[in-house]
Image 1 (cartoon, protein in one colour):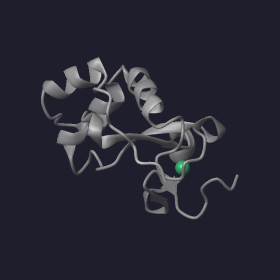
Image 2: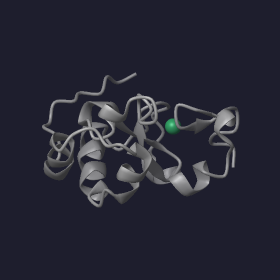
Image 3: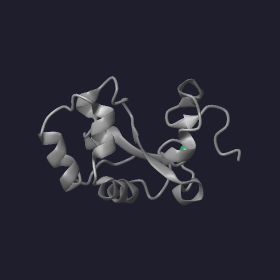
Image 4: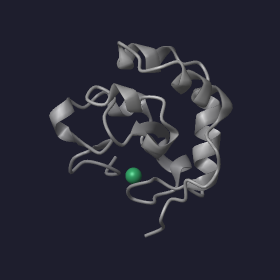
Length: 114
Ligand SMILES: [Zn+2]
């Protein structure tokens, strides 16, 4: 298991957004945040293009930005770089599963089996 080094500084736009304060509607705010690509690239570099949970190579299954502490419960962490990791499966696939079948951004028991 590799430890993720959050050594690099937060991507510029993410940090700018975080400094604006805690969003009232974290889900919406994140959806409308238009610099995810920058965040993705930065996370990819520090994770060596591997899933933060299972270390599968991200290009195999797609990827999504995962909030380690869920933004619904911790809105102040929505734009906090230290709360973000990349994990496998893109959000379109992930959204096909009901919430209770997901765990840490993975569909429980079914991940990687398709
Ligand atoms: Zn994974």
